[in-house]
Length: 229
Image 1 (tube, rainbow, N blue to C red):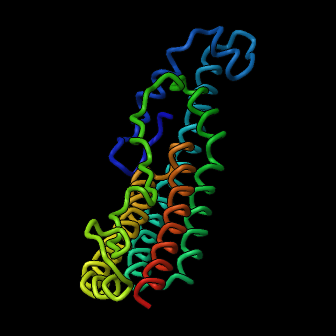
Image 2 (cartoon, rainbow, N blue to C red):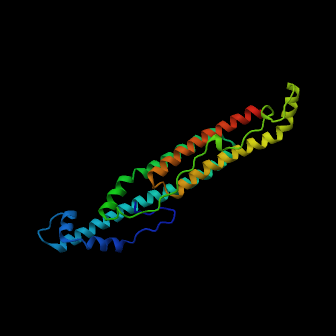
Image 3 (tube, rainbow, N blue to C red):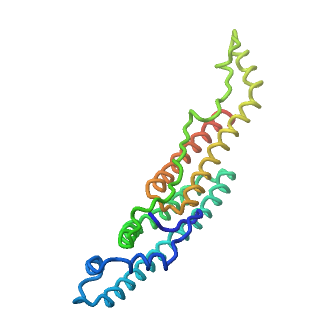
């Protein structure tokens, strides 16, 4: 969208933007800032004031994005702590905060679009974040089970004995599944924060994926409780 984001995109310098504004034709200036009865100097001054105001408004939008990025990083750190502690009940609050942070940036979309159009920057191409990665139960390591063992068993006692043998592997598999989902939740939030939530579709999809991954994490917790008590 032609504005700064916290992931390294440099802000455009004001002199370039002002020069672009002043380089308009008299007809274009009149359309942009109104008629001044042929007073081109007055039109130029009005154009400069308009450009200054536009840059000021864009700076305000940049500040919202920068603050949202910092908030998002803090949410990611907090989520990492809560997931490691398996504090399931405290995680939804952080996800709600993530969605609210994304919404604050989304509220600047119309302003940024309008001002970039006014400054003639609507054609500028800004690097878009990569697509949001998705995680499902099919992507997780499988759980070993005596019932799916390739070796046949003649009675339930043999199955139970095999289950005891598999118990250490089962514990490790559950831990690996939980860790993989937790890492995914944190990574999704960190990537959204790095982009400052400035790309609308990426931000919305990231928040949705974080919530979906949290539900998957709860499912993994329930499965571990079922298998290991």
